[in-house]
Length: 156
Image (cartoon, rainbow, N blue to C red; front, side):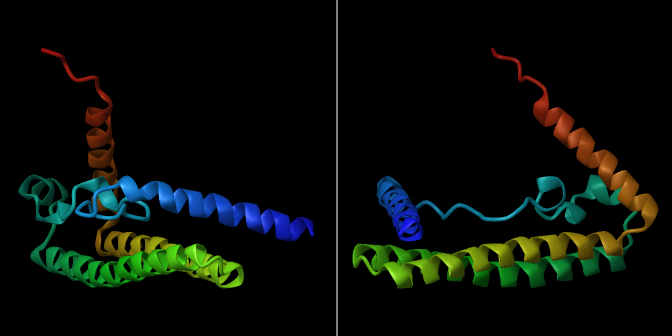
């Protein structure tokens, strides 16, 4: 009995959350799920200053680009599946199909976990392309970028 009440409360909370999202304009992209990749600069290995500071070889740049592209394709598919599953969950909750909604929630969590794994795998594979010295230098650059972002900006 307590399990059913708890599950019903969880479903009601999740349904309320979904309905609260209806005010978001449909043109906005869905929020991205997963940790942020290296440096949060997109294709950082294509930034000339970083390439020079890390002394990246053309082969490394090509390899990093392939890892990124392959991972992005997989992430696009996963995020699309996630959006579809969320839409299906909303439909199930409107129909008050409790058991199917719980299964769909499990599916959503599995897709989100796969997104995290894909991003982690991409980051890990990219770091494997770098030498130990390049990894150390990349961490220094990352700290500098984070430090700059933390500084208060002057108000004029």
